[in-house]
Image (cartoon, rainbow, N blue to C red; front, side, top):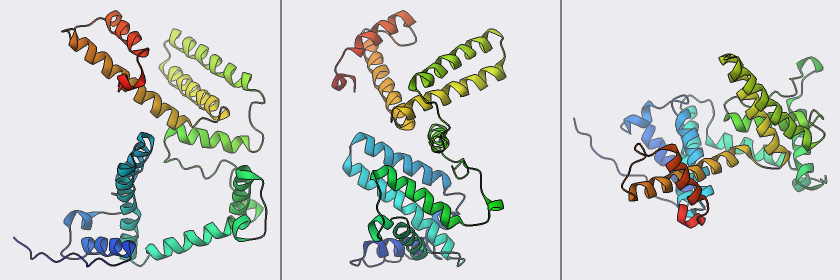
Length: 276
């Protein structure tokens, strides 16, 4: 069964309005079957994937790719707004309006007459305003760690939880104690392994990861970004190891750990450009 093609909406000087018109047409009768089938729930994996691809483009310093990936990411809220508008729940204008009002309200040091002491003061003021906005009585008070989304990657959520706890003073006073906690968790993993207690092993590995995130936080390092960079570095070096071994007429499967490790050590001393 064939359909009569319809022309794309004529472009205007308002690029965002053009985007909305195209998305509306895709969702409308006679539009794209895939777009028409989408719901808020089915779009969740696409939203997450696009956000990660934006992050990858940023880390790679690829501005052309970043522009493209930001466009793919932008499509997601436009699609969600279109879906919601079909039942009158909200639309893109109401999203933008609410966000604009929030930004103005939470930046009184810019749009009002208050003053803050640097970015730390901005964050403190933001949290205070956010609490005031939630309102409610004392009985309605949420737990202090409430509000850190469970949908975040585990490392990112751990770091946010730790930061929030630290704001009320629940934190190691000295960095040496933070490092000591890491060593303690390593020892507890060894003890759990010796006892062959799988549940304890899983618990202790989790505690170790949480402690390492604490180290990163105290050093001002974003744990998620640091692990992504370390994984990418391993991937590059391992790829170089594979290239060298193949050039020697062997395969990874045919090589011993000692042989692979010797090549690995050699690649560590190569300049970064030679490892990519």
